Length: 263
Ligand code: IPD
Ligand code: CA
Ligand code: CA
Image (cartoon, rainbow, N blue to C red):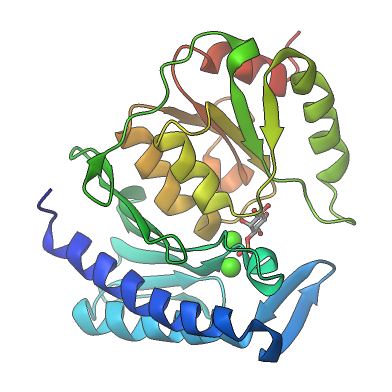
């Protein structure tokens, strides 16, 4: 697969940040960690990775704007384009020595996500997509699962932190979904949850209380793999509602009905 110049810039930046994260992951017990709130951690590794990404991406495209989890928002000379970046999605896993975390980079143009890269550096799995050009993992083309029976399907979600206002809704979602499917997984990295739906590993994924950097890259990867992606609130904007639900088109209507509690 030959990507655009922008996609190549994103992949190169993700690999560079990934190398820094892998190094820190090997010595995770020595990392300095602070908390942004209950259950919300940030480490030196997150910040170092975002610094690398910012340098690489802004050097290659100095006019683009920026939205990064650790360094916030910066307007660019070109108001139509911006990078949306989560340098380390799955920080809690990372800090516990669990090899399930990723670098996530998206490119937004005129309010639409046009390219996304989610790099699982620990497993060397590079998920990427560009609008209209399909979704890939390394050199494999991605396609969402073809399952049609709810009872054979597996879903992923994220369960919010202890004091999150989204916790009760999330627990109720699971109480409705778990009796009618083959299982629910909660692996702690939203960007990878989306990438795994694109790869057909999960049949669907939903979560409330997400930020744009958690989802942006994964959204275009799922869409380009043939999946349906919406906000949990019907018709709402995904970023504004901070929620997402996605899956293959066979199962999506029923899955969405259950999560939206539409009886
Ligand atoms: C978190 C992860 C997690 C999701 C949380 C996110 P972080 O991102 O994606 O799976 O449930 O809502 O905040 O903090 O590890 O970048
Ligand atoms: Ca995140
Ligand atoms: Ca993060």
